[in-house]
Image (cartoon, rainbow over all chains, first blue to last red; front, top):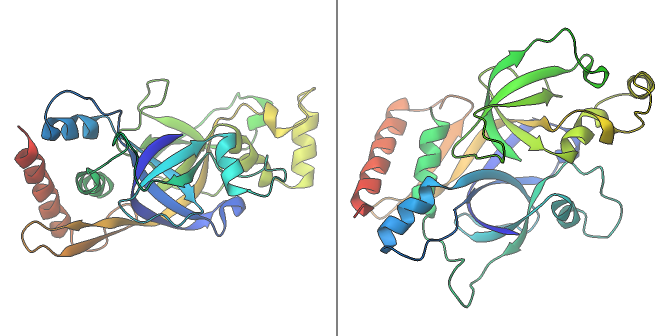
Length: 125
Length: 152
């Protein structure tokens, strides 16, 4: 699983039938934290190498919350949690864990505001 | 899934039998997307009738093949899986990206405004913001300033 930060929500009316009723969240995935440098330069480095993904959210993640994303068949297992066959699920990324905190602080993510600003710029081009 | 903008369409007269009658779209991913293969554009099959300039959700990998076949009827499926011998299921289709949805609106998280300390919700509608282009421009500027202010 990979960590990410929820930066927004998608509204989609015209969609594949398999996506109906699923909540889609826009999630920024900051790059791995570099340990050297001060906090500000670290933040900029993270921003420069972040990625933006769309994930199915079954856990009701809040905006700005740190989450862990599951990919591939793991994501389908999140969406269909009862163990039945999920090979026809149209999902390749899903929110699997809502992170409250961790002992090392490696999953802390305070860059959500900057990521949101960059996303806004990009989408309004 | 990733979010991207449709920038064009591919025409091809000779193609794999599994791609007969399928519309191919050129999608430019939004923001920082770095696939394992380094490309600026992705070609995705269209199941919804997306047009140039629209923001779409693109699914990658196995679910993309499923998306293509779940749209088809029985007749289309039997034709598809009988024409290339040995192709019995969607897993054999030469597809790894499909458009799953056309984005109406992206509702971004509120950003705390440093001046007033209040939260300002951001809403974008469609490919171009339907409200206040000026507002977006000024917002972009403040974002640049914010980035400069945290730079060492």
